[in-house]
Amino acid sequence: MAKDLNKADCYDIYKPLLTEKQCAIMEMYYFSDLSLGEISEETGITRQAAFNCIKKSEERLEELEKALELLKKRNEIKEILKKLRSSININDTKESQNLIGDLDKLI
Image 1 (tube, rainbow, N blue to C red):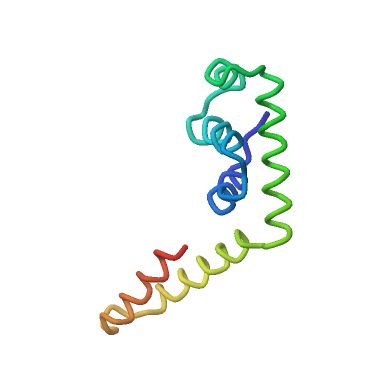
Image 2: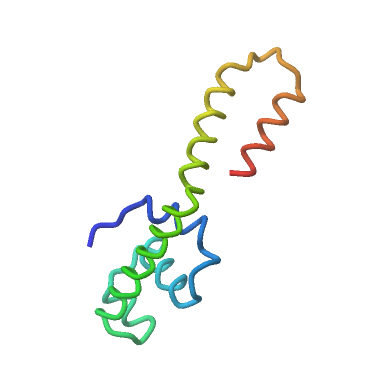
């Protein structure tokens, strides 16, 4: 099963809307880079159950993103910030730089 890093980004946003079990397995798979067999050993479930949990979690993340578009909006904000950063001149006020830093922290 190929890993879609877009799913990991969605997970970062929608994590609170998944179950504890889904979160644990998604983190093992995406962030600890464990195989289905390793997840199976770690959690005491079958490889098929680990696979099913990941698939169900990914489907839930897709549904949430389709409905709320938070990842899409975050990516759009990042692009605007990138353009803003390149358009601000080094002589611009410290306040402008601080505001950009504050926006960075929000995404």
